[in-house]
Image 1 (tube, one colour):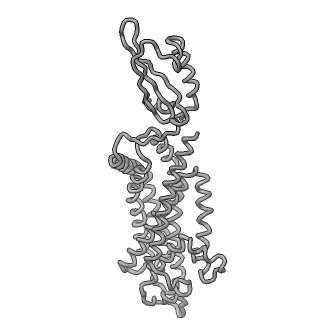
Image 2 (cartoon, rainbow, N blue to C red; image 1 turned 60 degrees about the horizontal axis):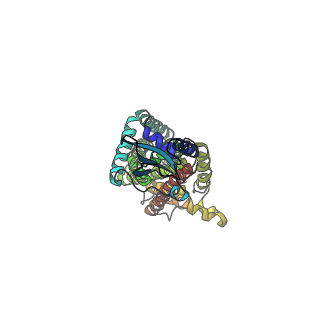
Length: 372
């Protein structure tokens, strides 16, 4: 065990509030040997050095013995309230160096955790195969256009909840490490936040790419690169948003509370997204709530990528097809006026808000740890 870390933990009360006991013991020791430590200056003392660590102060007193041989005595001295509230602002390395080291560490940890990465890719592929089997060849069938709309909605929901719930379960483990390292003044919280965000980007992109590529082909969606890329971009944005939301609830609360709050706050948005009830049918008293629903903007962007862009009428193997015309379908579900990039912009704003909330949640968690 690192002795320096242990001393810092004791001084910062991470192992209990024993500061006063240590001060009393140190005072009694010096009273027996050289008199009062606080009031009387030790005879023969030459100088006093102090080392501070946020909540405590270590005094090193150079003493001179009878033989003229110098030695040092160390004592833990309790600081007054003004010094106790002083914030540490200096670190052992520049912020850019902190970011580089933290980013490299995050990448190495992701590579070493092969089981979790392999499990994520495997489950993503299996769910994509399941979706492709259930909605096989629905994309070009005019008689199944409404069912294809359900497929699009499920894909969007999967990318949000599957990622957000896993993030809530994993993030509290990292928060405990962050608190300990931050208290030891190793790095700035902002540098950890930025390094972690950039290190997670490859996974945020890889998972939707695998899922969308498999499901898009099996469900026989339009073989057009622009539609594929727009649909893929929508789900990547939803995944990034899910990571931010899940990280916030995981950082600000424990697992049980985080999962409960995340589901209860997003389910109303889920209900008024425009899938279960058309937006035009909503009461004016609750219709305004649809404008803050993240799932509304995600569904509109995904539906526009598949059915919009002046898509031609679909082939209908049956005699009568209610929705063989994608443009008419968008009108009937109230999405005729939606704009793809406007929806993506709103989702990006939600991403920014979630990242700000995550950073504030980390600061709140660290502040609470300081108080205990």
